[in-house]
Amino acid sequence: MRLGDGEWGCILGTRDSTISGRQPFTPDLRAAMADVVKNAHGGNCYLSINPRAKVLRGMMPQIRGYVAKHAPDTVWHWGKLWHQASLDGRIGDIVRALRHQRIVIVGPHWLRDLPFVDEFIEVPTRHAWDAYDAIYAQVAQVRDAAICISAGVPSRVLVHQLYPEIGDHSWLLDLGTLWDPYCGRKSRTLWRGHTFDPRQLETG
Image 1 (spheres, rainbow, N blue to C red):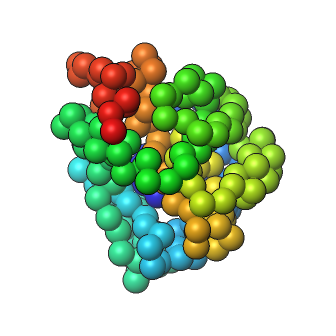
Image 2 (spheres, one colour; image 1 turned 120 degrees about the horizontal axis):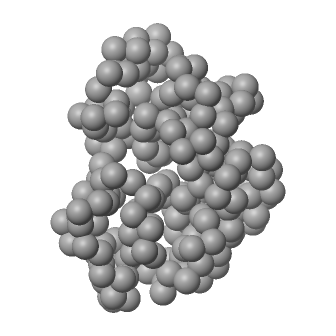
Image 3 (tube, one colour; image 1 turned 180 degrees about the vertical axis):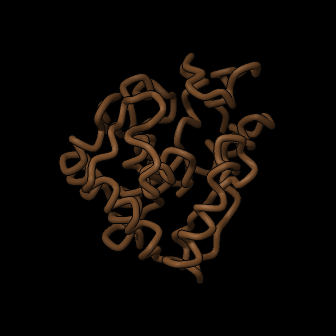
């Protein structure tokens, strides 16, 4: 699970919503996000961060203080892994790896037509946290699959809470906006200025 500026703004209480305004940070969402860090599972359930990201640099003193107090033993991983692979032209490698299992996409409507989708669970593009219980119930029924989650800030809570229940038979992958530019949506500054060929998703 990658914790970016939105997730940390939610945990630290320094923001009222995501920058886009699509997800307000309600008290229950703040508590659930804090639990992701305070009660991290460890093992093969990984937390990641990209401390060099421009939007995170100014937050790092607060983040380090929070982690030192609440999760001093947590091992953090590099948070740009999936996105960098895409920028390096290796999205086909990711798709080939996923195809070892049935692929379930949990995300906004524009991901429905990805060429490798075996099952699709739609997430609202605004206020996804309001639909969290329904999304959780659907994903909890999935068995033996690579579950690729793109549900904004609630994605991290979803992975954290589902891991003890289905993590023994399925992959739970918090992929953020990884697929967006292949669907014609350069939803993050990271993607702008780059070219993405959807045919790369048909590899393997």
